[in-house]
Length: 99
Image (cartoon, rainbow, N blue to C red):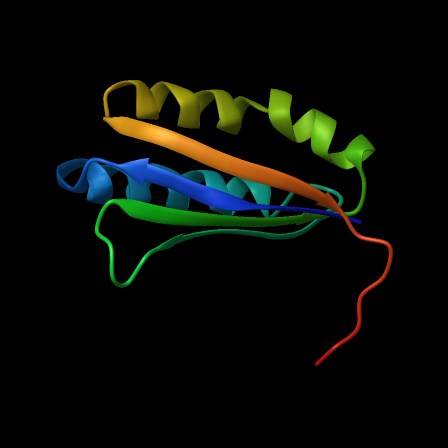
């Protein structure tokens, strides 16, 4: 199992447009085989921060996602926006349990 988590630092004036593009890519990604979770969330205290959380069955499932047309569309949508930074980390999870 893979978990990807991190943040995008977005110009606050571009946040709504970023979230609209994120909403579109979320809907398509959640239909992909091997995707267990994929969620962009605006930070409630910092208007420049948007969080990303993903959970994938394996790297074999993540690979096709990175080449999917909706990811390319998302990338094109971001070109017109000011995204100051992106900080994402991938974790390999050996096990999980409910809390």
